[in-house]
Image 1 (tube, rainbow, N blue to C red):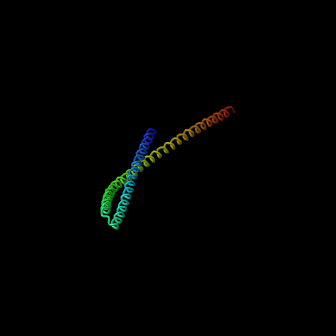
Image 2 (spheres, rainbow, N blue to C red):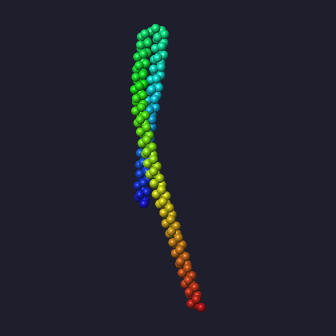
Length: 160
């Protein structure tokens, strides 16, 4: 039973390491999603600024600056679209990593519960054996003293 407990302890440590690995991977992918969201926000701001520059160029009648702002808007919109695709892929990977992390956490908790149950049973069994040995010693001593008393009574009866 002790070897089984040791094996389960090692298995629990292994599952803990796997859970931590999945946790790190989830954190890394979550950071990637956040990074993509921030980049999308930056591109959204770039589109807004280019649009404002274009409006100013239109008001001023500056066709070159207007065309430049249109080009900046289109490039920023294209980058935003590509970043949105990247964000979606990263979100899918993040969701898969989250599921994997949750599964590994559940497995680790299951193994830990099994380990704890076996350790508890072993401790109860150890205490039961110690109590049984104590009871045996007590009963043996009692039988010994009872038998001595009987011998004394027998000797007293014989002497009378």
